[in-house]
Structure formats: structure tokens, C-alpha cells
Amino acid sequence: MGGSSAGLRQLLKSSELAGFMNENEHMNMEVYLKRGRHPYISQTYINGYVKEVPLRMKNKEDCFKHITMANEEFGRRPMDHNQHRVLGNPSIQIQGGWNTNEDRWQNYPKHLMEAKPSPPVSYFEPKPLKEVRDKKKNSDYFTKFMRKKFPLDHSVGTIGGTI
Image (cartoon, rainbow, N blue to C red; front, top):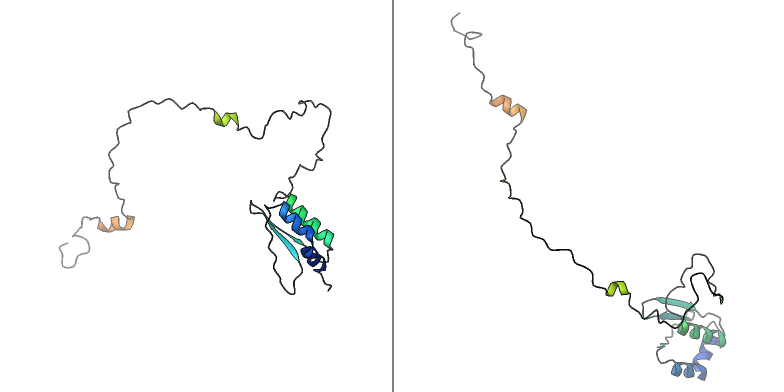
């Protein structure tokens, strides 16, 4: 039988994969048959990172290489180093040589362990509260004008009045 999954089918039948899975008990492998689909590996890591690697047209050795690479990965993308190559230098640097005697990764930061001084406690008398008064309402200009009482001059323009 040929096809794109021939190499993966040979690997699943081999004793190499069984021995590899017995050595690496922390790995879980689930195999599903999906007709009409190309084979792939879906890797789910503890931190939630999911990576899918296609195994289409790969031979047995390449499929096994991808499975071992999945076991050796951390479950995240590689860290950026600001476009500079990371090189190890055996000579002593200006900052000092590489020291492997101290276990720097297991030490908790000392500045977080120190007790922080609390601000001094002082009591002060608060100011008395002001009385809250209702605001004086300014009525509308036209309403105010209409309510205004004007003195009437009865001598001008009256009908039947005395002149």
C-alpha cells in the first residue's frame, strides 16, 4: 500500500516506536484514523501550546525523527535575541566569567523576601463638614418677564375713561 501515510503506517507497526514510548512514559500518544486526510502530529504541551506538524509523504525514519523532536521541545516558540547571535565565549568577560557553582535559577529574589517598611501611622482631626444648601433656581427669562407685574396707567388708551 502506498499513499501519503505509508511511512507512518510502517512506524506504527515497528518495535522502535514501542521501545521509544516505553522509555518516555510522560508522553501520551493517541492514533486516530481519518480517511481522506494526510497524516500529521498534533502536539499539546503542559503550558497549553499546540503545534501541528504534517507527516505527508514522509518515510519511517523522518516520522520517527519528528516524534523524537516533539519529545525534546519545550512547548513554546524560540526566544528572540534581538537579531544578535548568541555565542558562548570561553574567555573571561568584562562582567566576569561564567560561574556554575551557584544555583541562580532556584534562588527567590531577595528584594521580594525583605520586609518593607510601612508608612508611619498618624491621626489627624478632619475638617467639619459644610452644610449643604439647595441651589437657588434661576427661572427662564421669558417666564420671569411674563410674571412681572407692571403698573397700569389707566389714563392712556382706555375706552370710556376721562381725559
